[in-house]
Length: 49
Image (cartoon, rainbow, N blue to C red; front, side, top):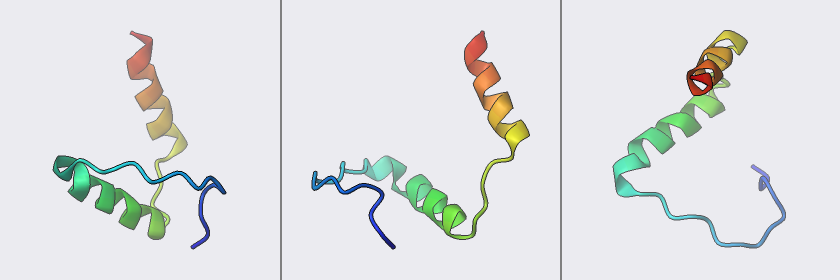
């Protein structure tokens, strides 16, 4: 898998409390399970309050 950027900066550490969620997100991306447009719109609407 190619890098997302050509930046040689070190990766940010992952808080162990969030590791399971990060790994699940990576697994979902690998399976190409992405949020629908409606789910994204709903998430952004939460910030409009």
